[in-house]
Image 1 (tube, rainbow, N blue to C red):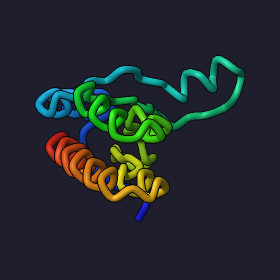
Image 2 (image 1 turned 30 degrees about the horizontal axis):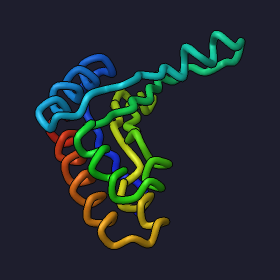
Image 3 (image 1 turned 180 degrees about the horizontal axis):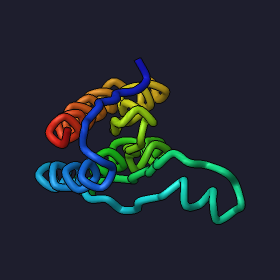
Image 4 (image 1 turned 30 degrees about the vertical axis):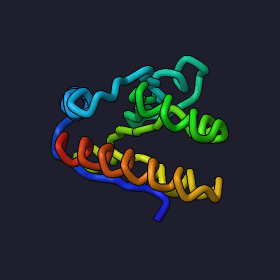
Length: 128
């Protein structure tokens, strides 16, 4: 499977705050938060769903990965999406790093990706 998604009863704001706290415990920070709804509306497009893309990174892990294989930079930083499913639930998900890194056909990189994936899934699960 390409992605991992969890569901919470928390609203967007609380889900993101909880996620950020969980990420900090694993030494990941949010580099950027992109509000798709706001951006679409700025461009005059109708979009009613709350949908945010968070780009997250652990600098030490990113350096370790890039020192091993520069091509991994195509997959950095990691993305986590948080959105309203229009049924009163908030979803938090991400593309699995193992799915992305498998494109490199590099066994050592797959091990790095599995570690990052496990940690990010733990952060998501802790935030719901």
